[in-house]
Length: 120
Image 1 (cartoon, helix red, strand yellow):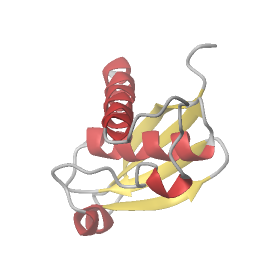
Image 2: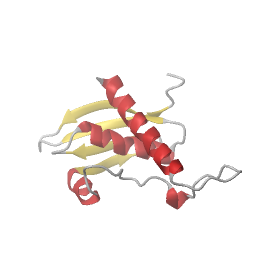
Image 3: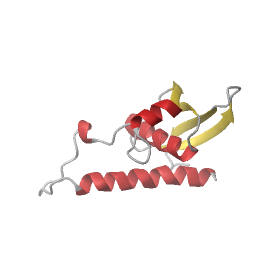
């Protein structure tokens, strides 16, 4: 199950990169998008930005990890956020789910590590 949760955000990230490239004009020289053209921190999908803010909270973060607290949302949506975080802070690294546990307030906390999967 952990492998599936790890592969899903990577596939979604690849698809979003392809969509961004196909919308850009083609030149003889390959032009990379500006920082403002990059994918937003919250991916487009069936949840709006306000819904993410209601259901997901960042509890801790560092250079190589992030901890989300969430409720009433599936883990694959949170994994997508973690994938975007790792892509923005550590280019070339992917989000790897370390653990999930439930708090007393019936909210779950998920910890993601940013790792280079090629070396794992």
